[in-house]
Image (cartoon, rainbow, N blue to C red; front, side, top):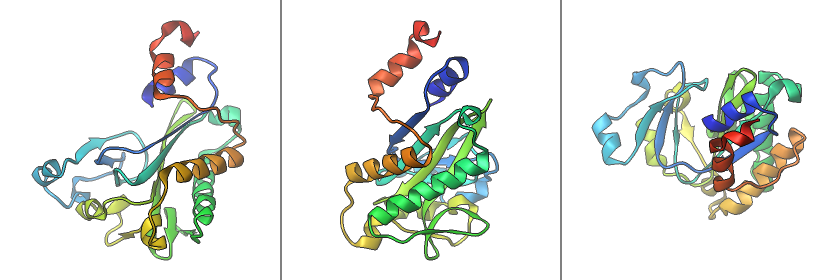
Length: 212
């Protein structure tokens, strides 16, 4: 992700959207405090959960299997977008994606992310460097909820998390979810998406001749 951000800053690359799932990890945004972690570092290590402080806005959150993550690497100036417009668009794409799974989701005034009732199903946290966006959104489809018990998600004490599989009481197909999310993001941000493999993206970042 960081390599693609640097590449976009130095060359005329198209807008990039990364869709992935992480190994279990806690990420701490710029305003995060250690008090948001409710488990000892030894307990986290025993559970195979790493902790990283990163550049995005927002507070602490959990990423892991069963959670679809999208990182938009966009040139805001070229797309004529403000940061708030980007965040609103990400939330809207999540809401439309959930509608494809017959789930009615919405925003809660004053709180970022997407909610089903009073339970949170998706988190938003972005960073912007010289007009290029990175980090993004995380949508729960079937995560290990016990891992969320180790933090105050997004710094919100007592917040309950939910997921697509929990609400629908069925298994969620991650391939269909990824396609749905990509479709709505491309429609909302007027993107013409063409698949890249990890190998292609890595080669682009690591080949100096392709930076010019």
